[in-house]
Image (cartoon, rainbow, N blue to C red; front, side, top):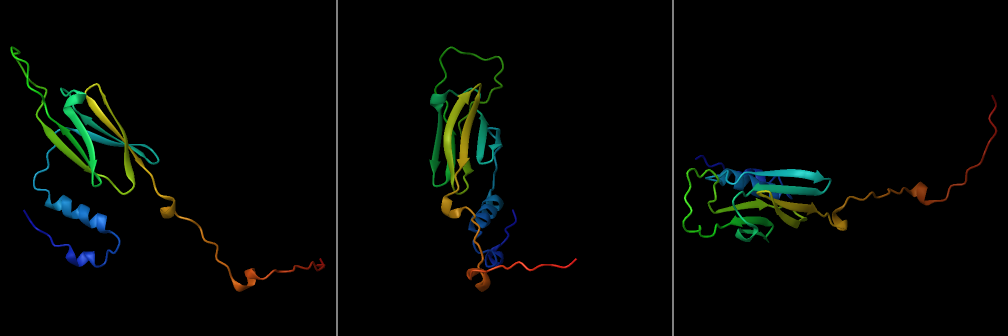
Length: 155
C-alpha cells in the first residue's frame, strides 16, 4: 500500500480539519468490509436515514450507540437452537460492527427494525450562532437623515 503525506496541504486548509481527517481515514483504511450492505438516503432538507440489511437478527441482538460523533451498529447472534439442520444456509448471520462518522450537529433521532432492515433516522440541527445572517452596511451619508425636495421638470 502506498503512503501519501498530506502535511504540506494542511497549512493551506485552516478550518478544514474534519476534511483532512476524512482523507486520512479513507487512505489509511486497510480493509474495507461490505457486510452488511447499507444505504444512506436524504429524506428531507436536514433529515437523513441509514438503512442496514440485518436479516436473521432480532432487535435484541442489535445495538445502536453514538460515541464521540461516531454511530456504532453492532450485531451478535445468539446460540443456535439444538436439533436444527439446514440443507442450504444462505442468510449470513455472522457478527458485525459497522461505524459511521457523523458530521457536526447531526443527531440520531430514532431506530426502527422492520422486515429485516434496521433504519436509523438522523437530523442535522444547525445552531443559531452558526446560521448565516445578513449585516447591513452603513455609510456616513445613510447615517444622516436626508431631506428630499421636489423640483419641477420641464418636458
